[in-house]
Length: 248
Image 1 (cartoon, one colour):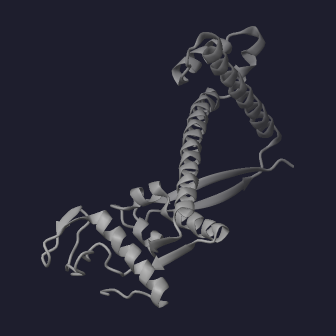
Image 2 (cartoon, rainbow, N blue to C red):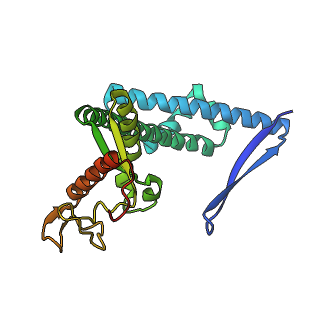
């Protein structure tokens, strides 16, 4: 008995969900023969098209796209040795050419992503190794990476720098090299606190990169000021043996 499975996906656009259904059908002997013949022709066309694209690129420096392969397929079906391709639906054969284009595109995109990931990982390893070797103590904010990634304004930047991986590498390399990594409370106002006088402003929106303390008049670079506060708080934790609470 010949069994064939079909998978179809029904989309509910309003709820933005998808549900898959599996169907089983029992083809007649004639239908099973036609299906097997179609599958064989599809495989043949896929391999033929892949070879044609490869040969054209390496032998002639040309790229063949769907319309080029479709034209060549028409000629192929007229050849005495492959006239049997006309015995099955042309729709299946044309669809296989489209699949080939998508497969090539997916492979290309996957290679690009893998290359980017490798470069990012290499950069993080070099950076964390240098930081650990050059410093006895490293102080960090205990950022909730998952929560911040939900913020569409920050998600791409946080993902690009690989903050979670950076912290992970610092922690295990600190153990290797007998260094200390201190995490500061995530609510500590490192950006809003003036490093010079300790005054804390009520608000510090992300778009403000430089600000002047209203108490002492000192002008700060947002990131440098925050880094100085985080380092001071980390050293205080080591010295006092307790967490630095917000506002201190």
